Structure formats: structure tokens, C-alpha cells
Length: 277
Image (tube, rainbow, N blue to C red; front, side, top):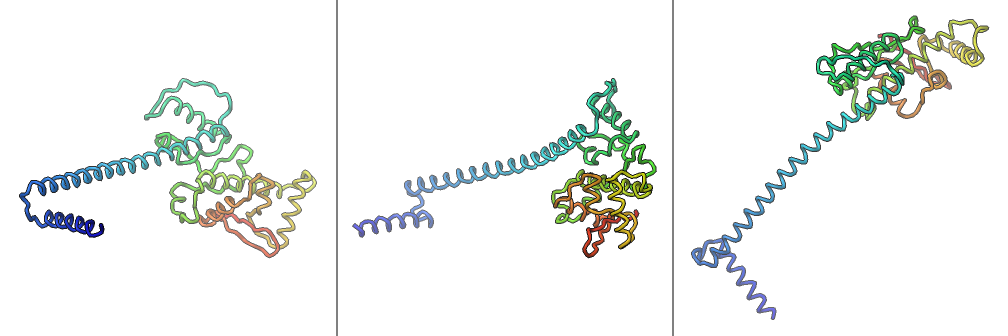
């Protein structure tokens, strides 16, 4: 039995050898075999070409999906900004569209610029300009907004721009958004202005909570008298800022961008000193 199987295998190998070498190439059987093999090869190539075309199409779709995802993220930030900065009821104004903007966008920017001029809202992230397709020259963009009560405030750490953030090393930047960084800067500005406003007042005029912070700051200055600084506790107590891992990562970025300098004293909390621009 094994001999017959070996003989049959040997015969098959002989036929394959004859097909490859062209021996008896005119034999109808071998012609049919060659034609069948070539046909299979062509079919395989066609399937491979179709698969490659499908892969290219999928790659293009992935790129489109990434762009769409970025737009959705910007839209989410935009809506979040509206929820926190635009009053629940606004006077309807019949505003014509301009420069490719919709009426809604035009109305929004007119209202937003009016509110910002009054110091009632903070600046919007710069990446929304691409999301809304709004020319930069039509948007009032100030790096740091002061309300009427804070018009004489001494601290206004400028916001970080998109071009600055791009230059930050990716390992340091991670997934931190520009809006989160500038929100942190707003917390620093609020904390610093509140702190030094309290420091200018007489102790007798202070509320108990403010007096407690006042005495703590005086004690800190007795150890080392730095100008224009706050501590993590100040950020928590005054601005309600959450000092978590993300916050410390943002502070690292602000140090890298020369907005802040961190000073560590033995047995004391870190001091974040404002760097004059």
C-alpha cells in the first residue's frame, strides 16, 4: 500500500516537473493544467488588489474619522463654554450673517464680545476659531480679562496660546487640553489677586476666614519674603482649585513656559512665584 502511494506521488511530481520544464508542453492535459494554474494565479492577484484597495479606503476613512472626532471634541468644549458663560435668556437680535458665518454664530460673537467687554466672561479657547470657521479679525481676543472689580488688580498671568502649547514636549503635554491649562491660569490669577487684596487691608477689617489666611501669609513671609506667589493651599481655599495629578502636570507646563517658578522650602508647601513677562 505504501509503495502504491509512493508511486502515485512520484507520478504527480513527474507531471509537475514536466509542466514546469515545458516537457510535452503541447499535450492537451498539460495545457489544461497550465491554463487552470494561471487562472488561479490571476484570481488570487485580483483578490489581493481588491483587498489592497479596501485597505486604502479604510485608511482614508480612519483619517476622516479622526478629523470628525477632533471637531466633535471642539464642539463639546464650545457647548460647555456656552453653558458656563452665556445667560439662560438672551435678547434675540436679528443679526445678518457675514464672512461665511451663520446667523447663530454672528449673534453669539456679538453677544460674547459684549459680555467680554463688560468683563463678565473669560476668553474662549483659540481652537474654536477653526471649529466655527470664523476669521480671526472678526473676533476680539484678549489674553486676560479683568472684571470691573478687578480693574486695578496687579496680577494677570497671560493665557497660553496654541502655538506655545505645540512647542511643549509631547511627554510633558500628554493629553492635556489648552482649555484646562488656561483654566488653571485663571485660578492662579483669582488666587493671587484675592491674596494681595487681603494683604493690603487692615486686620480689623478682615473676616475670620480672611484673617486666618492673612496671618498665615505673614508667617510665611517671616520665613522667606517672596513677592507675587501663592501656595497649593491658597489655590484650594481661594479658587477652589483641585490639586490632583493633572493640576501638577499643568503647573509643570506653566513652569516650562516661564509663567511660574516653583520654590520648595524645607518643611513647607511649594511656592508658585509669578514670572514677570
